Image 1 (cartoon, helix red, strand yellow):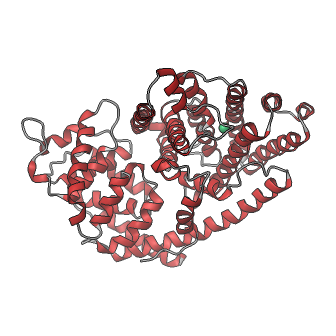
Image 2 (image 1 turned 180 degrees about the vertical axis):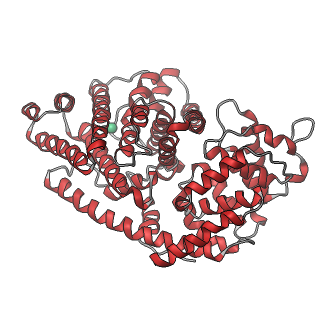
Image 3 (image 1 turned 180 degrees about the horizontal axis):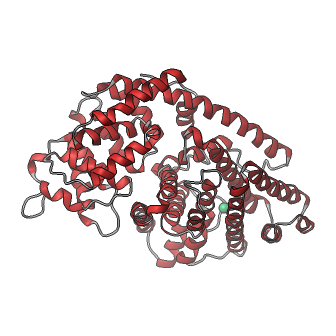
Length: 504
Ligand SMILES: [Mg+2]
């Protein structure tokens, strides 16, 4: 399989040179990304998009203009929304003749979701495209019908790409211009990677069983496969095996610590636990009751093991992740103080703490720890721990989607007042108003995350990984369901990603 992959890879590399027009190049990049084999051609793709960004483009095809817009913005190249003006009349309404162009509308819709703040014309484009796609969705042919239905449920920019790739690999032969070698390559690559992912899952499960059963932690959620899935949404590529394993373990630590604060420890124990975590030295175990002693030592050990896995010049990264973990812990303690004191904080204060408690800021630092020098620079680590723009937005999307899901299901008895509840009580509004407000904050966060790609050119590889995990949140918490905690909903996805061979 590996031999065949290498042969095909060489052949596909040649396709870049064979492209003569901008449109051909755009379509090649789009296909590679959609089939999730773009990771083999990162350099070529960047070179192609960079050259396209610097070249004038005058197409009369909505699909082509929207495709260019989306691919460039995704890669951190800014494109003006005015590009779509050529499809509008003098009153700034979209032309009637594009209302029957399913492919064009779908591309417009998916492109417009790369909006940032203050781009009302892109929000209008989404509404316009949505309205027309909805009216034609029952009359479309395979595979366009499937693609439109998926996008209407969740736009491409908020879709976890590996799951979308599985759909697309099987649909690809239905595309008029499909290339059999691309299809074969996509299947082989997915199947080969799956073997690696399964190996990692096996090792991680052993690690977890040891920890979970050995240390008396069974009060916590037993969700190691979901932790791995979460890590995998940041990076699935072969070269990030080390990073993926470290991040999956860190996410498992988030869950363990969260549940320790929420369901196991008394308030006094929470305070001591946090004190020990802030001190981070073995002598601090004297503060703790037995069950926390074990957990505390284990935590220190696990961070030590992360260090052991890194090369000498990389080890300093673990100090960043430890600091981020200490920040997480003190925010968990604040929640515990509120909960045990029966205090309903102001909305603003609640969001400040609970977004950190989502684990997203810690995960943003943690995802860098095992990556290569090209991504995990000191600047990137400082950016991540600073919890601004894309990291903050990741935390908000995670927190708010989780809160909307929990609110719908009904509160857990040990949960602190959620953002939805705090908003309702502070503003004296109905549930619907509060949920609409939270929804609008989620939209704001997506805009922030889109904008971050244009703002940090040198940090872009780190920003993209944070973006990847953010885009997996609808998989975890979409349709107002917490699939992470009540993980039956994730079983199908997990099987398709890690167990079942790809069907062509
Ligand atoms: Mg909690």
